[in-house]
Amino acid sequence: MNNQRSLFFNVDWIVILTFLALCIIGWFNIHAAVYNPEKPSIFNLDTNYGKQLIFIISALILGFVILLLDSKFFNTFSPVFYGITLLLLVLVLVVGRNVGGNQAWIPIGSFRLQPSEFAKFSTCLLLARYLSAINTKVQDLRTQSVCAIILLIPMGLIMLQPDTGSALTFGSLIFVLYREGLSGYFLVIGAILIALFVLTLLLSKLYLIAALILICALLIYNYKKNRAFITTVIYGFIISVVFIFCVDFAYNNVLQSHQRNRIDVLLGTVKDLKGEGYNVNQSKIAIGSGGMWGRGYLQGTQTKYDFVPEQSTDFIFCTIGEEWGFAGSFVVIGLYLFLLLRIVNIAERQRSSFSRIYGYGVASIIFFHFFINIGMTVGLVPVIGIPLPFISYGGSSLWSFTILLFILLKLDSNRMGII
Image 1 (tube, one colour):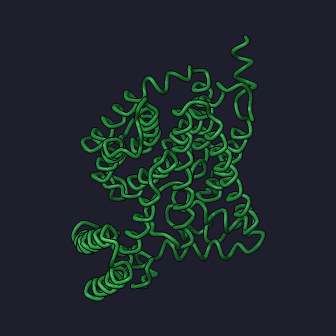
Image 2 (spheres, one colour):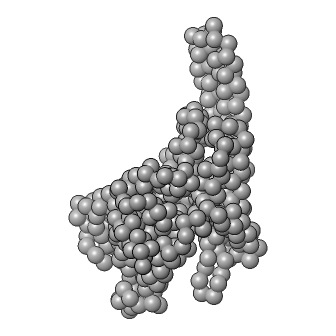
Image 3 (cartoon, helix red, strand yellow):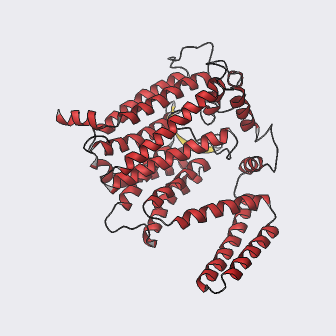
């Protein structure tokens, strides 16, 4: 009885209420996105909005079960969870169903399981277990190498599907390493590589390399007495040139044509409003037409006439923008920012390094999904097809985010009260 009372009082109910609010918002907007006049009831189980209700109820049950488990269970069995998800990622390549060009789902009756979603929480758990081990320092090359392996294995398997969006999600966990002491130079290097990637696609390789030579020459001239700095500049130049040619090769020989087109549309080098740019253009029209207060529930013309493909999944935010307007969009974004800040606060107040590291993993993954999903609906980032947490339609997505979040709540509930 005392343990049940402790569970009830120590769990962070603010996070749970925020989670419920986002789930309910998602349910109503899925109803609006795929509304069927012949089956108008939001409780109709023959429709996607009716199925989403089942997913939400089952997610709540799943969350409650997690809260009943011993906190040590997640640390102890993290390698098992990681191994199982890797096996599922291999299995989906063999027996998976191809949907939209991605072989990412395992059919189980009428339901489709997406292993890449569950790999996110298992990877967070294993990463937290490894980094929290005694004598493990993220500054050491060996530790960095092991962390890279933990992240790259699921990323590689997911890329084989190929599901670029889900694979890139694991890259967000670099913020976990940064919190644990990884040098800020890695983030700077990452930003430089992103800039080089974009410039490689926008400019001629010859002009870009010439500009790099000029920059390096100026740096060497100004710091000619610092041999270590000059050596770093030379190595940096060589790596940059190699990276430029790798980007050019990957863009022309690795990326699929639709992926290249999406990048071209985003960078403005190609205008294709009827092809690859159609989804984003229609999404922006829907969001813009909502104005301040929106057109009203079930009144969105872009939504009602199905102008935006995948509107209940990847582009669910444009439904919010059209029917609830700027005010509704502001509330949804505010809920996500509040949830993220709360998660970071929970992570920082943990007594164990395992719980803290895992908490930052949760924050990193949810932030990546939130930023990229909303960013692609308004044309700020390429369309890579990842769901909006707790709002987009889908059982695998909702369950995986629920597991991700409620494990953190369970780890946090062991503390003596909520701060």
